[in-house]
Length: 298
Image (tube, rainbow, N blue to C red; front, top):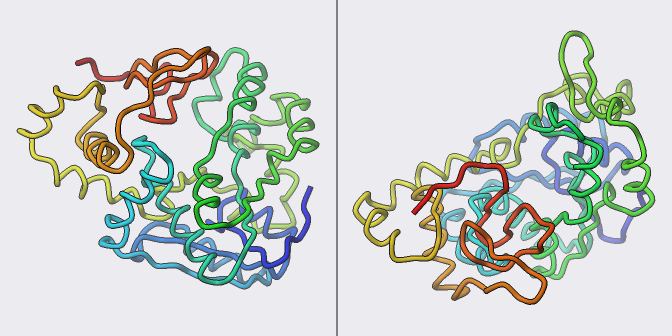
């Protein structure tokens, strides 16, 4: 599953996925990103650094740096998806890797998707079929951002042999009750129980934007758009905006990227923005629309 790339590093949140990978690569350069000193990632990463023999580095990002990087991230991804705070964490991590001279960086991308790490998966009627379908259309911003910085991204959880195995095991090994609590990614937790500290193995899922503290940008960005502008100008654009923050990202998208790409042959129009998306896909990479999630009406 893993090989040690020359001049390699890992984006290290201290969560289960990155901790598992770091455990298998002692001495790897581990990069943790936080907005100012917010979020819990640094606490977990520092705690693990003491036992995993890592070369740990912390990239502290100021609010002004984060806000200033949004246009470049939107230009790289060609997207105004509300998940931009997640992508900012990856952006600064890979930028720091570039500054350190690293040419290869590993991420924990895909683990939550293939091992049922999301809470909504717990009640799905045919989870196995859903995960199989999901695995065929996974896209991560780390690939585009890595390409921008000239860094090769490695995603061990999505390597073919490992992915085939993960898809073949039963969902009862992915979601299971233990000690009175239902756990997603149970098989991964069980595999590293005894090798990683219990505090890490049995921690609750911590979204990237929350663990890094980037989620606090949402309120700041929303305050930068007045009610009047959102109400008046929001109606001018062919997009169903989730909120002021979404509108803010779209304004930057128009300036840095341009028009929303229309559907091409074999694609359907996204209900949220009209962009072309694959007929089998349930998520729009351009605006962030997700099938099954309530979306505002014009």
